Image 1 (cartoon, rainbow, N blue to C red):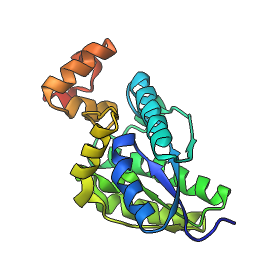
Image 2: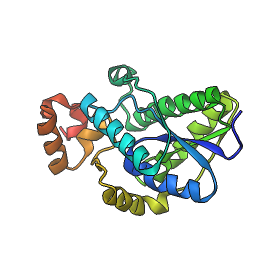
Image 3: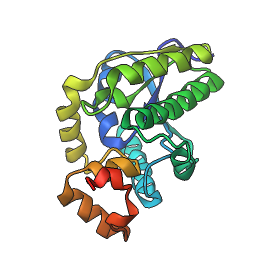
Image 4: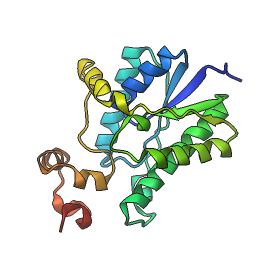
Length: 202
């Protein structure tokens, strides 16, 4: 069993982990990271974000556990078409995996860097994470990091981290600002026809 001050931090990406990691360490937690984000689209973007987390881990002397499972197509096959439902499935996949891993490794509690983003559904994340924690017999540490979002982005910039312009899934790629969306599509070798029509305003 780990010490009570040891904490597993689910990391959605490098930039979003900057501020939570800083704050948790200041509070005395011994933090380890956990990367599991199986529905980032396309896979090359997933690989870029994983590399970014590895860079942050090296810079911050952070142990990060990686779950390299990539399930983007399976996530889409759930068939949910409403944004709220898609996000809920996304949260559930991540929080359940993080809670299960934390319990298996002897951590008594976990949290997530998703709580730093003002663009996420904070209440849904917390609700889902608490259920996952209960399922695996551990605790979820709720902390509202959103006031430090901008600081975290500046920290990421100073550390030379890649700062993505969309949340991660194919739907969020379609929703991002056209100037960023089109740049991504070109770099990925995709076009608008490859995105769900609902998200291109058609």
